[in-house]
Image (cartoon, rainbow, N blue to C red; front, side, top):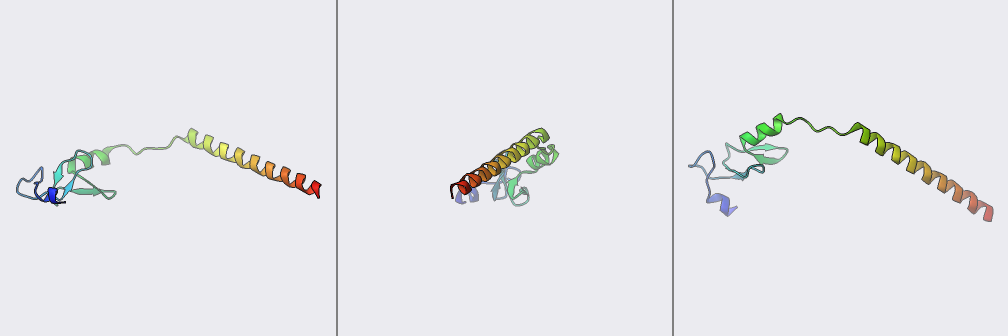
Length: 91
């Protein structure tokens, strides 16, 4: 924090830097910093983040993962029942 206290804002040379933009690494004063999801950014980088299209998951990949999970669950159930029958026959 001492290094930031000795440095000035990239936009306002008369102000001390209080934060660093996590995208472009500019030093920022209180007025210039903006938090986006708890992380400090400069005005330009926040604009780019806000303008970026939202990432969407792949529906086909999600369906494949769900199908694989169901198949694995059914296989485990069949194995458990088979072991139960085998164990019951031993007694």
